[in-house]
Image (tube, rainbow, N blue to C red; front, side):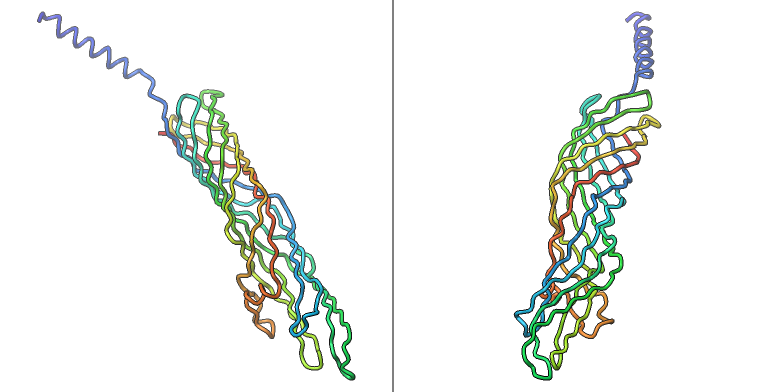
Length: 293
């Protein structure tokens, strides 16, 4: 080999090294995100209705209950996402989120009407009796909790060197549960000489977990602070059919204030709960960080 051979190899090595040093690094394919949001639910009304009962009076009839306004106020949300870019513009995304939204609100009066036959002194002849009444009720508090899993197809478009917009949409699954208290329950009993007694119980109600499916879509604006770190603002809507939550009595909150201490099972037997219709669709605005690698 001539003397020029090593010089040529060295020159080639320096050329390749210089070219690689100035080459643009490959764009990251993976992205993880963490976001905080404020979801909002549609307001509604829970109509708590039941027919009051009276021991030894199978003929007893009437109506009792109250209306509870479901607030629909904005709550809090936390979400984590994992994105895999399949190309410069197209990707897939998996999101896991949890939301907590206020459910309670102003309550209507606790009211009742009871009709039955009683044998009262002095002649103890059967007579029709009708008892009506109502008491103001305090605000009812509650919370609806949702766990959300969503899978999306994502399209990303640059607006400037440091700003991009992403559009995404796909399917979602939601798991809902919650609670509501205090809910009013009026129970009646009969004492000597057909004397009627009534007591009002404050009950805590929980909603059995329910899973439903739907669709979701959203848009995100990201400000790229560096090649790997971004700040993001996102709006997303989850569409799902209306569902019925199954309530059950969990506890009696004022047993220390009444003569007869009732149990949740007794309340369920004498004042069964109606299902709660919930519009499980909701929208949320999210803000968070994104890390690409």
